[in-house]
Image (cartoon, rainbow, N blue to C red):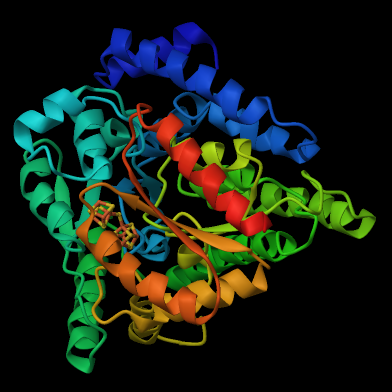
Length: 426
Ligand code: BJ8
């Protein structure tokens, strides 16, 4: 997209042009250093490079064009918001910016300092006028997952039209009844906002589109089980991040193209790194774009990340929605079932997550697990103790890291990761 066109679009969205320009410069430099400097990358990562280069340009223009045609753009920050329902009213679902250390000072005037970086970041992006997606949205859907988010939406809704879903914190029958009614309530809200009725056909089409996207991501994950790993963890994370922004059908096609190339690499024994590189699984808090810090630290220290037990990773893609129902109610039941299987740490107890981390470490032949936790995230930092115990029983080493979005602790993280890799090598 031409620079003058982009500027005009950002101006019309009310962004702070000078600060936004600075942000794009910083991100462009980081992208060069973290992504473009990689050796032996699959050629078909070109599409994903292009998406990133236009992430605040062409894609935002597509959203604005769709709005001109009467379609609604719905933003969210969590995996519990079903994209299928948004598609069923011919809307577009987008994940909103929450992965960079911007506007923190302004955010801390409204939020306690000891709030996790992800929450401060989504406030920061909004207050500082830096997220074109938030500005292009008709509605933001929040959720009552952790306490921080739940309370933050009470303030955020004064800055942006926000609707909050109630997410239960157990998986009991009563919790399922509540969750099913919340799915119905959201469906009604989306019908009201869009002026469109959800039919069994439109909902099934939405389910098929999102299932197809998840199947493509599952294919990518399966290919990463090969040794040598055909693609870096950094690139796999990037793809997982882009899935929250890109058009789902186009994304699925492009990801299958990349997987075809990766399949050839696996057959030929070509890896992005040598076969004896330590293989690591990352588990924990989501890494929203453009949060690339830890994968960079791990991979530039001599390991390769082969899987992410994360919402921006396998936690978000491993379960599909059954499309067997023939009525709207039956399909909504299937959505409720699938979404309540997500094993976010806000649930208690949460044995599925513990079991799944071990299963993943084995399936991906990971020598160890790095547990990634954002500072002040109580659910994931508390659960790290149980994760450590269950991995110890399976004989799998764990490194627990707590960090935020600033770059100040990078040398300290590097030291800890390098020491952990030494242990894995032995
Ligand atoms: S389903 S992980 S996307 S809630 S890091 S804001 S938990 S204090 S992001 Fe999440 Fe949905 Fe769960 Fe996934 Fe709170 Fe922790 Fe911050 Fe977090």
